[in-house]
Length: 343
Image 1: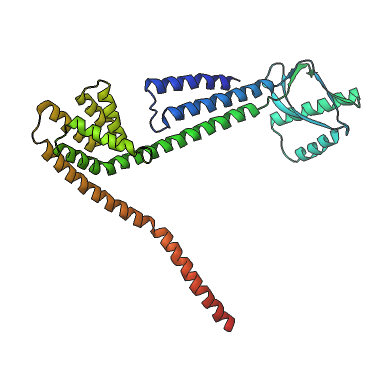
Image 2: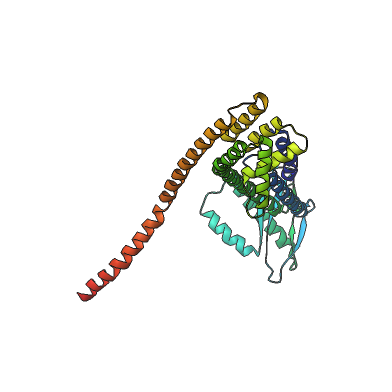
């Protein structure tokens, strides 16, 4: 039972650690992963606690009478303690013939003091029932050799097992959510990288056409909004956020700074810095710097495309080798069969 209490105490502590930032939520599924972990862990611990409470061992301090089955046999495990000493496990088996067979097997090996005590107690219980000579019930004595016996049925461990299964499942789901989050972040990173050259080129053309930086952002956001239902791109979603922020009263410089931080890539931060410098100093070389940045971005995209092409070619080696093996088998197996069949 105390294990369930410890788990209930640990879950709020972990949640507090995640909330305070002591335990980073990045890489473990974020808030969704933490919420899912908490729900499954709490539910499993509650179910396990109910089973543990319902299946707790019953103590018989004044002996116990067990009804025999129709066959007259009985077998059950008990924990028995003598005068408050540490409890030992004892299997009660009826009829005594089984005990006699067990005794013959144990005589061939040397018994430990604990095993010898269990054997003596089992013999005492069997003798006690011989004296009772009750065909319907089997009795557990409450004393032996002047020592008080306390019998206890072992507690049901299914609650602990269920709690452990739920905890393992919650941890597995937490890892899976973390992996899913990492995949999304990687996809977003690559998407931002691939969209950067096109975004810079559009922005450069608009600025060179005479638009202000703010108007250029609004134009790009408006064009993207028309086709947003068909396809969504992370870079253009961030531009829409910039426009919403400026419309809600955020200064241009602060909106551009947040834009660079949200994108999280060096190229976007450089782009945001250029925009902020243009606002602060009114740089006359804004168009030239943007054009140079656009050229460098396209070169970087070409290099990235070559790297991705080489990686794709490497991944195709395994299926190509498998296809080669299949073709060789199709050609060579009939040849071998005809050769050995002809001979």
